[in-house]
Length: 131
Image 1 (cartoon, rainbow, N blue to C red):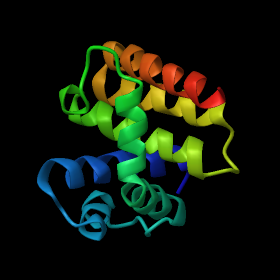
Image 2 (image 1 turned 90 degrees about the horizontal axis):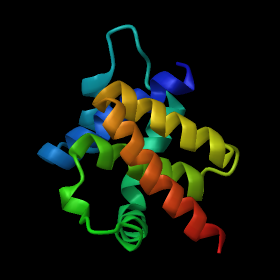
Image 3 (image 1 turned 180 degrees about the vertical axis):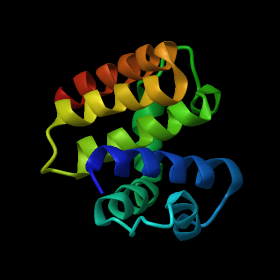
C-alpha cells in the first residue's frame, strides 16, 4: 500500500475512533478493502496518533486562536492530529512532506476551505515548535 493511500485510510480510521468510539483495530479493518492487507505504515499512524493523543491535542489547543478543539470539524481534526503525530514522532518523514500531505488530504476529504484551515493551523504549530 502506498503511503498516500495509507494516510487516507488512517484518517478514515481515526475519524471512526473519534466520532463513534470504535476500537482502533476494528476501525482499521473497516476501511480496508478485501484485497488490502494491513499496512505497517497505516497501523503505525493510527496507533501512534491515538497513543500520543493527549500531547497532540495539547499542541493543537495551544496554537488555536478563537477556536476550540471540539469546534474543529471531525475530518479536519483527524487530519491535523495525524499530521502532528507524523511531524513530531515519525523522524524518517520530512516535515514538509507531512505538511503537504495533510493539506492534500484536507482538500480531498473536506474541500478548499479545509485545506486552508489545516494549512493555517499546521503552519502555526510548525512555527511554534521551531522556537
